[in-house]
Image 1 (tube, rainbow, N blue to C red):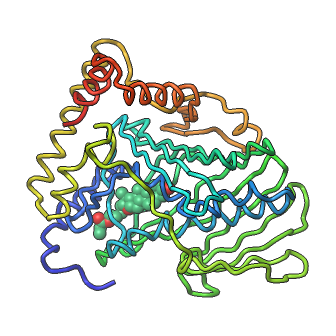
Image 2 (cartoon, protein in one colour):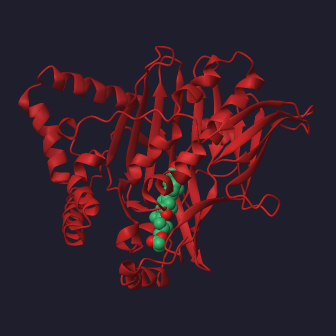
Image 3 (tube, rainbow, N blue to C red):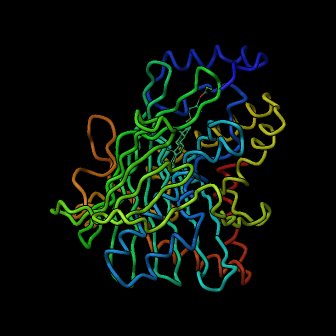
Length: 409
Ligand SMILES: CCC(=O)OC[C@H](C)CC[C@H]1O[C@H]2C[C@H]3[C@@H]4CC=C5C[C@@H](O)CC[C@]5(C)[C@H]4CC[C@]3(C)[C@H]2[C@@H]1C
C-alpha cells in the first residue's frame, strides 16, 4: 500500500502509544480516524451465509461423503467476505465498533428463487469483557442451523497484529442429524506500517463431522510456492484413513479448484470474485429494537461517516457511560444481564465428541464455557414479538422498551 496520507500522520501518535501498551484487547487500540469503521463487530456474523444456496447445498445431497465436501466448500466460500470485504468496500481493513453487552444484529436473507427458503441471522454480543459475539443462522426449509461464538486474543510484534480466534462454529443438518465442528483460523494484520492493513490467515483450521469426515485447511498466505496472497490447500479424508478423498487448492479471496483425491480429476472451480452475494435484509431503524446495532450506534455511525471526530467521541462515551451504569446497577442488585438468545454451558456434547480441547479459553487456560443458541429463549422472543405486533398491553412494551432505552440512547 501507499505511504500514510499526510493528514493522517498526526493521528499515529495515539495509535502507536496504544500499541506500545497493547494488552491483547483489540478494542483498546486507538486506531487512526481513517481506520475507524462505522460497522459493529456484531455484523460480522453475517459473513457466514452470504451465499444461501451454497450454505444450504449440503442439505440437498444424499451422499454423506459428498455432503462433507459441500460443507468444506461452503466454509471456504465464506472466507473472502469474512476477511477481505472491508478492503473491497472501504479500501483497507478497518477497526469495527466494539459491541456493548446485549447488542443485537438481526437480519434475513430472503429467497428470490422459491427453492432456498429464508435464512435468518441472529447475532448477539454475549460478553463485553472479553468481547464475545455469539450467532445463529437458521434455514428452516432445509433444516440447516449454524451456531457459534467467537472472541479474539491478539498480540503485537514486528509491526503486525496477530489474532488467535477463540470459539468455534457448529453446522447442523436436521434431516441427517449430522454435525460439523468448525475451528476458526488464526490471522494476522499486515500492512499496518503502510496505513493500509489487511488480513492474512495463518497455520490451519479443521472441520470434523459426526459422520467421521475430517477436513484440514492449511493457509500459506503469500506462500513461498505461489507468492500469491490468501493461498490455501485443503484435504478431505475419512478419520483414521490416509486416503485423500478430495483436495481443494487456490486463493480463498480469488478462486479455488476442487479435485478428486486419487485421480486428481477437476470436479469444480469456484470463482469467489464473480459469485453473487445475497444482500441481508435488515429492518428499518425505526422498527428496530433499541439494542440493535444500527439503531444503537446510529449517531456514532453518522459521525464516523462524516469524519466528525468530536461527535464520534461524545456519542461513544454516552453509550459507554450508560453501559457502566447498567453494570453498576446489576452488581448492586446481584443480577447479570439476561442474554436474549444464547446460553453459556460448561459442556456441549457435540463439541466434546468432535473436537479435542476445551471451549472458550480465557485467561490462564480457565474455560469460560461454550455459548449455545437457546431455542426456548428464541421461541419466547418470537412469542413476545407476535404479542407486541398484536398490540400487547402497554406494560409489555414499556418493559422491553424501558430496558432497552436504559441501555442505549
Ligand atoms: C492502520 C493502523 C491500524 O489502526 O490498524 C488496526 C487494524 C485495522 C487492525 C485491528 C483490527 O483489524 C480488524 C480485523 C478484524 C477481524 C476480521 C474478521 C473476523 C472474522 C469474523 O468471523 C470474526 C471477527 C474477526 C476475527 C475480526 C475481529 C476483529 C479484527 C481483528 C479487527 C481489529 C480490531
